[in-house]
Amino acid sequence: MADEFTTTVYRDEDADSSYIESETVAVLGYGSQGHAHALNLHESGVDVIVGLRENSSSWDEAEDAGLRVETPDVAAAEADVVKMLVPDTVQPAVYEAIEDGLDAGDTLQFAHGFNIHYGQIRPPEDVDVTMVAPKSPGHLVRRTYERGEGVPGLIAVYQDATGDAKERSLAYAQAIGCTRAGVVETTFQEEVETDLFGEQAVLCGGVTELMKMGYETLVDAGYSPEMAYFECMNEMKLIVDLIYEGGLMGMWNSVSDTAEYGGLTRGEYVVDEEYAREGMEQVLDEVQDGEFAREWISENQTNRPSYKQLRAAEEDHEIEDVGGRLRDLFAWEAQEDADEKEQVQADD
Ligand SMILES: NC(=O)C1=CN([C@@H]2O[C@H](COP(=O)(O)OP(=O)(O)OC[C@H]3O[C@@H](n4cnc5c(N)ncnc54)[C@H](OP(=O)(O)O)[C@@H]3O)[C@@H](O)[C@H]2O)C=CC1
Ligand SMILES: CC[C@](O)(C(C)=O)C(=O)O
Ligand SMILES: [Mg+2]
Ligand SMILES: [Mg+2]
Image: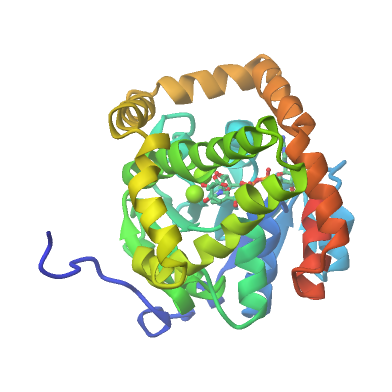
């Protein structure tokens, strides 16, 4: 075990805002991350132009928020920093539309390194290529910023043509609120491989399979869907909040001794070390050897047949219907969060 934490955690005082305040930033995309970065940068005093398609459903929303909106090519041509916040699979096409607007000394910046790491975008050698990646969903990047807080973030420098790439990345991270929480430096390869693994094996894939199977097991055994939902879905946030605040022991210290003993002895009945690790290693192998990337790129080139089928099955899962009805009946969150939640669903 490491004697001490060797990674440098950068905070507000480590960033020099002059590296971004003098720049014009084109935020391409106004979705989960895009709206948060554009609004946070704007409120931090940075000159922002949002880049959107002419028929964009987000155009009016961004303008109503007081932001200037142009098409991506116009925004990028005027900007010194171009932030790519459209979906990963459309970034190569958007890049083709804006590359002529990249001048020597400009910055092309990402929030996930997929297209650089897997060679889908190859920028010119006279621009900085960097990443500022919030380790958080975009809507929480915005919500925490508005509360004077921030979410942890990563920075990475792929190409440093100006010699200021890291300083400008830290200044950008500060302007979207990440240095309020803490920022660590990584590489494009490490961010891509850990992020894809984490979202597939744990955060979005593994955990939701556990939640659905727990719900199905209780309902199939005759328990009410409401009880199954409360136990296996709704309470997950409360348990994870305790882990977020205080680690595993923060959670174990808060739950009952009965839950602690039961969890420590029966967890491996469900997540069997041998099979789970085998599955996780396969997920990582397919990320590292590019298999997942090739599959996802091909899926998008054929109009997403599997994605659409899987998403439809998820939307049709009984747990979504039960959860929707319960969320309407219970007031378990502050009204401001409920209103913002409505906005997230409206954005989908
Ligand atoms: N979602 C998240 O929380 C996180 C995302 N990231 C990364 O951030 C980047 C952006 O992801 P995310 O915010 O989820 O993206 P979204 O799916 O939320 O992006 C939607 C935005 O992209 C625009 N858009 C969609 N298709 C096109 C197109 N063909 N041409 C131009 N604009 C288009 C949409 O505009 P329109 O209204 O015209 O459809 C909309 O403004 C990705 O690299 C992702 O990996 C990183 C960390 C977390
Ligand atoms: C966990 C999913 C994520 O990586 C994220 C919010 O960090 C994403 O790609 O959305
Ligand atoms: Mg992530
Ligand atoms: Mg991700």
